Length: 373
Image: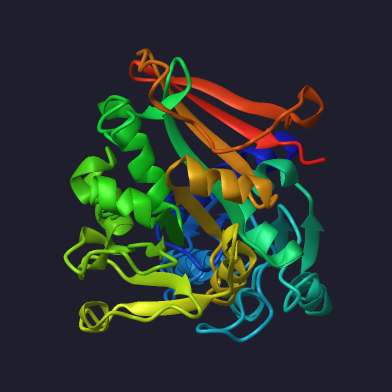
């Protein structure tokens, strides 16, 4: 096959991989295309946890036509037994003759073993086609496997003059409907959504993924809304009202509080999961929280909160990205700032790198990466 044909097939596999971005977690969302005699005979993408991996789904579709085929897959086929069997073994049994993987799996349980198993079975193996593009598809999984913590992103909405709420706390709605649809998709691709008790009290937010607000096809919206991210509320003094929307049964919730806090009977009655964390003058231990979320295999962590908690994550060096929605409105000098970040000198300023800037309805979405000193 020509280089252009192979590149096209891997590009199609990457397109398929993105179809699992709202539902495959905690597994990486992977795409696979099977080609025989120049024709596509099977396609697949990672199904929700416990379901078929991309390679198995493609093999099922191909049937006997998989024998003698080439597999284009966005991530090295797994070689270990999890909830499903090793994909490398499935490809070997099916009789594929060649495998092209976009990248090696950063999971230490795989890390080249899948490719080696295929080679040992006499299958021609190549790795690296469209690798940079493949890495952009699963950044949270790569982060969790390579550094022991998933990708942490903060979502913030502000006016043109950098304000996030009126002095009273009123903040709905700064941005327009298109931006809110975009935020729904950010939630849908997240394993956990973190907020603070102040936001819970002022907004009575639900932090759920809502099928009719995703702006996706009916099939995609149903698949996305079937997965509800873990709602995490940081509440050192346990001030969350028992009637708060985040404590309802629409999605799982973790209530984090100071390890010495007395849990009110009304909170105990909600049967919500709780996590005691160390607490000091700077607040709850955010590192301990992320350790807990890592143990839960959280690849993508979205922080939706007010300026105080967002500033705390930033000061601790824990934010990988800030996604800021800027609305064409002015809220005035008495309104609340984007972040609580008490810097005194220009030498203390935190440089940012703008990764992306695009229009979303009448608003602008700016994605920036902190350049920690």
